Amino acid sequence: MAQFKEVVQRSSLHPKPVGLVLQYGTAGFRTKAQDLDHVMFRMGLLAVLRSKKTKSTIGIMVTASHNPEEDNGVKLVDPLGEMLAPSWEEYSTQLANAEEQGLLTALKDVIEKEAVNMQQEACVVVGRDTRPSSEKLSQAVLDGVMALGGKYHDYGLVTTPQLHFMVCCRNTNGLYGTASVEGYYQKVSQAFVELTKQAPNRTDDHKHLKVDGANGIGALKLKEMEGFLQKELLVSLYNDGSSGKLNYLCGADFVKVQQKSPQGIEMLAGERCCSFDGDADRIVYYYNDDAGHFHLLDGDKIATLIGTFLKELLPKAGLDLQIAVVQTAYANGSSTRYLEETMKVQVHCAKTGVKHLHHKAQEFDIGVYFEANGHGTVLFSKGAEEKIKQQAQNENVADEKRKAAKILESTINLINQTVGDAISDMLVADRRVIETADAERCAVSPPGLQEAINALVKKYSLSRAFVRPSGTEDVVRVYAEADTQGNADTLAYEVSLAVYQLAGGVGEEPKPL
Ligand code: G16
Image (tube, rainbow, N blue to C red; front, top):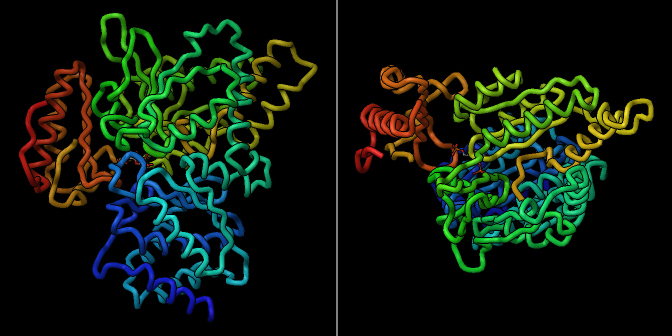
């Protein structure tokens, strides 16, 4: 077939380094940018097949999110804005790792297994973050799309959630919104301005927000969006990319891990601040109290606030909808207890990775999901959306109920339901020696590690700890919580040491925090 000839020809311009093997991680492929050209080309090919198979537009975002500037990566976006279906992750890995002479066989294998109709049209939309390597890599994606004769639209510099939004708009024929950056600003800002009308006494202090843009794409896009917000949000932007390095000493991951404010932000007591990550799909808030103590509002806190807000609003609107919060093992135990025991909201635990939380959250009328690192969103089922819309227009119910339903309606429009939107560890020779079960809360290998962790946890009250290999960085993540900061720090150190000793630690032995 002529198409396959074209694939072979173009592929020779994006040769795979012989012997290089990459694994599909928590959110796609992610590694040093110089090792990714062939992966990008091949993901362009894969996206065309996925598009033909689903008869929908597919998205590809070139970004390594919170990772250092030298890294890059690729996130694939499925028809309704969700992450690529797990069954196709395997195909991605096959294609990415096929040696040059085996590429066509790998490609034909996917076509055959999925019975892809090669006569079907394909459309792929592409976006990229601000990394120096992203432009060239997104060109490689487009080459892959063209090699298989797919149509494409290059959105250029956009945030990851903006690209998810475009995909969803295109596949719902505009029902979700207009598939342009301006369409995104209009939809989100309009809903925000509408909501602020329900809180008429906001002062300039309430409206003011200091934003750390992580020196990335989020900063750029927030500047563009400001004009749409009708001065209802007064943004002071820091780490806007004009001088600093991407994610360096700033951004949501830095603030969450270091539990301190990013470089460049001066915080007065009580001032509201927030940080995005490198592709603006994570957000964490923070402030200093009068005594100068730092307080972080991470994903757990955000989920609790949103869950509480919705849970209180539903009866006011006269609606009986089932609401659930989905967390990961990283969720602080007290946030889970508060939601379950005080708010009477059901809580579920999923494996790390937005794709797992998203999937679980789809089971409910309203599913609130957040990872502690600030990645999350709220999903409303079609039925729930319909009921809310009807109630907002129902002339036969009291004004108060209609008003509450209207707030819910604006909330739906404000939230990007496709994906979370923001507008160590310790080195082990091979982090994958650690295998986990029970939504990552239990290590099943190497032998003896979980028993050692259990024994350490028992020494402290209200304590929990677990370890897992990262799917985006070459590290093992260690999580610990206990009744006091001191105990949590000691437990984290002790667990790190156990990992180091039992899982083949390399480099310096962990030291007490
Ligand atoms: C990605 C995923 C998140 C995950 C994070 C860290 O975020 O989308 O779900 O929490 O990686 O994953 P890990 O602990 O496996 O390294 P992002 O914002 O980096 O794309």
